[in-house]
Length: 178
Image (cartoon, rainbow, N blue to C red; front, side):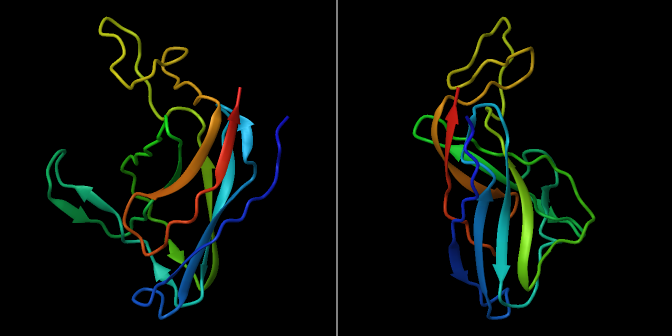
């Protein structure tokens, strides 16, 4: 049985420097808070802006060379957003592959809806081989597929690829079943 309900959690912060003296509030809304581990959860990050629009298009930063501490700001790139899950035993750390989208991205006056998908599998895995699994690692299934997270209760955490002038919304509790 999968329970479906919309969950509204609110976080607020005043953003005078970016939002024209307005107020930015956001909340994570999930289509379900209980699913079988391995199934994705669809949702929306709702960002309410009572001030001026905030342009996030040029917030992408890249390393000039792998491992180099120097970075460059790119024009016409937008930050990415992901939702990770964590509990006392497992913490997902979303990573962002460099991809530069030329689409304009602003937090408008009013409500901006940003679709998100919550992944209920490990975000990575190790293929079994001569070396074995490193401590803290999990073995891949079917060759290269990360296994589902263990059943249990998890908290969501919204993560951006860049620093953005948007508060982190309150966590939503999610229950994964087998």
